[in-house]
Amino acid sequence: MKGLLITDNQEEPLLIADVPKPTFQAGQVLVRIKAAALNRRDQWIRQGMYPNIQFGTVLGSDGAGVVEAIGESVSENLVGKEVIINPNVNWGKDPKAQAADYSVLGMPSNGTFAEYIVVEADRLQNKPDHLNWTEAAALPLAGLTAFRALFHHGAASTGKNVLISGVGGGVAQFAFQFAVAAGCNVYVTSGSEEKMQKCLSMGAKGAYSYREEAWFTKAQKETGGFDVVIDSAGGNQINDFIKIMKPAGRIVFYGATNGTPEKLDMFRMFWNQITLQGSTMGNDQEFEDMVTFVNQHQIKPIVDSVRPFEQAISAFDEMKAGKQFGKLVVVFD
Ligand SMILES: NC(=O)c1ccc[n+]([C@@H]2O[C@H](COP(=O)([O-])OP(=O)(O)OC[C@H]3O[C@@H](n4cnc5c(N)ncnc54)[C@H](OP(=O)(O)O)[C@@H]3O)[C@@H](O)[C@H]2O)c1
Image (cartoon, rainbow, N blue to C red):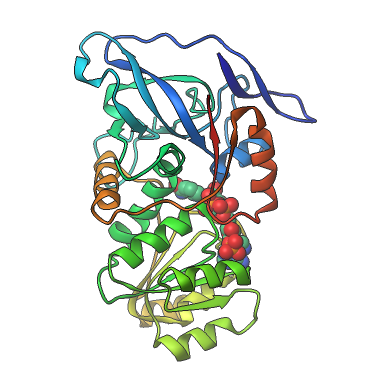
């Protein structure tokens, strides 16, 4: 079968090659992948900017497909089922934080950028009926990360003022859609006028360009401040968020693309009872709850582009350029 591997070739570490079709054991299922989606993580791995890179691994954390075969002790009802795959590997018993041996599908274990994948049967959820294959493949990793950040750590609910920072991001777009569906007053920031306009047309109450120096003063004046900020850029901008939080507001971050802030306004944080909370992916129950929420609100992931699997490397180039709004998806015949 065809698969996309990470190799030690320094010029282009990604390689589409023939790899053995995986074999399955008791408790596992063989899924024929119909569509798979990129995450920033995949491009970090390509750039050598991810810990413990294991060359020869099939990349890809997001996938949707059809169960083709099952191992012993797996329900026969699963054969032929249309599914999406939970990208958590060994979250562990504590719902609050992942176990020490936790990992994400698509390194170290082989991922979804291949015609077939083998996973534990309990990784599967039914594909939401209202989603086509490309939309379904776009959902898992980013949907889960957004769901935990927004609802578990952010405690976002109807009527709360929620700011989604860098809304063009893969996770941020889900946080935006989920917050709108939950009845929050949703505001966004972006570096792109086009993405801001798109969000305004999809239910955002306001949009600010983080490229404008004093965007946060304007945002504070127009909104009265935020109960929740969801961010993955980090950097010195965290101090701007601290200034525009309502008392007891929560800033939740699941990435730090712009690094650590040089200083942190701790005085304002303690006086205003501000929480700065890290978050990563989500536990298995949250994955299930996220899919239920998507079904309940008939949410359709935003897909930027779809291309045949053979052209997957060009999707990585697009992710690197960062102009997309929505997920980059590849499909198999
Ligand atoms: N912890 C986890 O479980 C987890 C899960 C997924 C991702 N992540 C991490 O989170 C980060 C984003 O991931 P992603 O998949 O959403 O990536 P992505 O799709 O590449 O998103 C990057 C986005 O960051 C935004 N951005 C750039 N500079 C910014 C700034 N100064 N202020 C605010 N936003 C800014 C841009 O938004 P605009 O286009 O709107 O300008 C851009 O689209 C990455 O570092 C990734 O590794 C972590």
